[in-house]
Length: 340
Length: 265
Image (cartoon, rainbow over all chains, first blue to last red; front, side, top):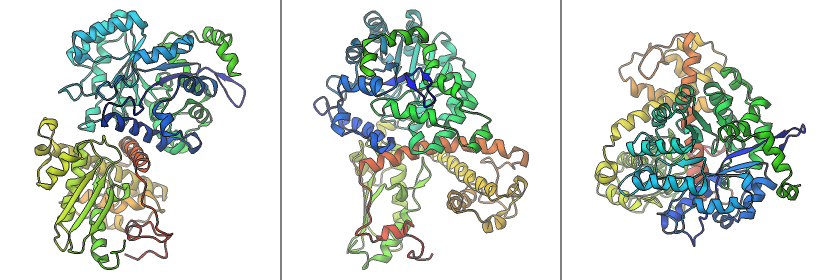
């Protein structure tokens, strides 16, 4: 819960968090080393100075660090923890669902654990989706279309194998498909970031929600166009939001475009923890106003009501969280007492 | 910078040429992005360049476009030196360095990985983005300066060349937009409007706001990459620091020296 300076309590769903192990002990090769270093550079490049972590902590933080940063020092009520395997880079994977489920176990009411699969695995991918549902009862998955797999240097949401997977997700009630469309690892061409496959997949799978992480940046215009046409396409603010500190005017331009095109109901907060921690992001977001000239040009405002939607109510809708019931449940949980 | 006083003229020329090489994705000079880690003229006149990108993962096609730009810039040096260009700490550094040394093309170097990539088309896309980004900065600068939309859109090249802005992005982009315009429309007449669309269409004053909104979306994407790259670069490698508080040659060339001490162009 975030309490505003005016004393209002705001329900926070952090749509994008991780519990990874990028430590040297777990690194399989140079790619593993470079991957976590790139994340660390994002962290140091866009965080306020007083929020910087030591590299060793950043590589591998504890479950207690995560609880504290998200829920005790941090304002999150619920955190969606995404899985990213990267088993070619890390001996035990980077943040597998096993690892995420383990951290979530202590406070199950505070976590939503999402799975991941690679459609290029064919039949095995379908079996794995069944496994994810039966073992973890996942409500969502994270897709990474630019990932290499053997000779393949990426895939599209519209590939026939991918469609088979999404049909199964639909059937099993795995409704939320988070798609990484943003800064990418090893793209041969950055134009392979293309977001147009979202357009087709979202049309063909109307029952699924397509949450485009990082809002397709650096393809914001294409993303906005698609998300405007498709009622089931959403934008996740991870990576875009930290600009609020380093380049606030630029953030104003991004959020104004999003509000103008896709509207306040379809934008989701995400810290991308542990690249950034949610507390400063939420505080700065609550205090933020779009610069007047930009707001006037686009005819949009970032009101408190809209901020509340972005910070939690929109994601709660997608994940069927009953906000009032959840608030009560959390208020009476021992964890909350430890936080006071 | 011990050799600066000896071969200062050549070093200056070298940095000036390198300053014309842009990161194609960001439309910003590679020297300003800090990608040229070292550029040296040795005692026999040959040139050594050490090049480093913000991450190990930067797209190899962009790396190639930049290094190809560096290669072309070095070919224009007045003393026609031998040169060595080395890309550091990139996942394809070995392939690129070997290929560049042998004068290979991108598709030769990345025969397997490049698949059907058309670098010509990519270059054109980047050319268009640069044109739009530069134009937006100048248009906004002129509006801020108090010109009406009609005045701005009626401007021809002679009027453009004498236009003045408040210091900032528009000033920086004024000559860069001019260059992009002439490259895009080499046969244009001097009395034609300076501000046209990438396709060459006249922009009516009533359409300027919509046109600017489109240009803004192009810039938002480019700035996102630019800001990330700068952040990553600063973190990954220590930036060139001022030595003992004294500006170095690089500072002069990159205009990082406060007015008064900088040599006038």
